Image (cartoon, rainbow, N blue to C red; front, side, top):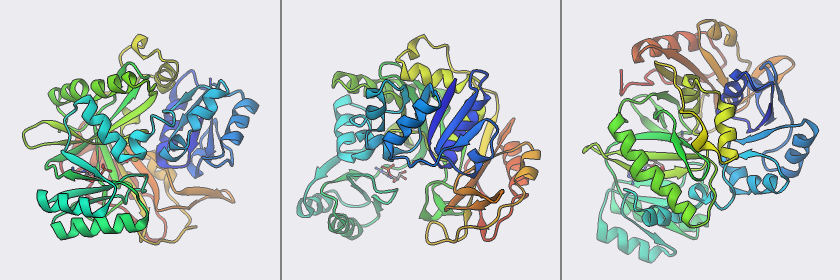
Length: 419
Ligand code: AMP
Ligand code: GLY
């Protein structure tokens, strides 16, 4: 089969890589892809933007593509799936209505309440005064969430009432018309990416990511500076609770509403000190960089799972098989990220890192005159698989040390919670 991956990040390189490992997949196209997908055998980039649905549909027809796999939330929330399905194209990724689960915090919160899943207490507000009164009544710490895609900048975990009130004013001033104010939950976060065809849901291995730029999980929030799977905090008992109390009721409630959700349901969870999982947020896509840690452990061919979701045949699919061991992914970023950074720096040492038995997933890169150069904040993610955390961590760092570009930055403590 031939697949087309929409997007240009590390997650999309990992999806293309995992698809090409399957004996059934002869070729993968990426729109627009990056330097990594451009340099991968049997993988070809097509210079099409993720929101140019007509050009994507044309590329599907021109190249006899059997399945489109959508990476980022933006095209999903703009309705790429609806557009392609109307043209009889098979798509892995939820439709526009379903994608609200990520695009609208208030929609997601109402769904969680209807499904009766464990989550933080919350209220939705359309004006500052009422939100501020609620914050004053609840006290701090408290969490303020903008309703709408905000590129990771829409959530403020406020330690004081004043900070929370300022966040409310700021978000309404920025033009958001709704926000959610929610109870602060204590604990450790875990990401469970689950595959669903709208009826059946199958969780992948739990992963944890490191969101902050600085070592010791300090400093500004980023898209994610590293990740690992299988995350030991999500014990088999907790995974069972997540599946039974969160994932299954959520899919059942979507179905009851007549919503046919086919794709990844990404559950961002808090494991409380009592050992109970509560849902913080849902995303409608694979996580980045969690995908770069989870997919290298997958033994079942990815294409057969994604097709089963797209064709609503997941219940008939054999159980997902995993390789034993642990995968750790460390992200290398451009110096200055998540603030301003320079682009166009030549990257060397990728092959040397690969010779150390690591996988180099490229993210913000492009191929220029045969050289791979930096083209974004998160430049690449190096993943190593080991029998345990200490061997995977040692291996990933010995590989990433081979790679160089001007002002390259990476955290040296990925996996510190489990070391
Ligand atoms: P979200 O986009 O809703 O996942 O929020 C982004 C981040 O904010 C999460 O990954 C958590 O670190 C934090 N966060 C969100 N909601 C809460 C909450 N209710 N309690 C504590 N931290 C939260
Ligand atoms: N790593 C967090 C996310 O993909 O949203």
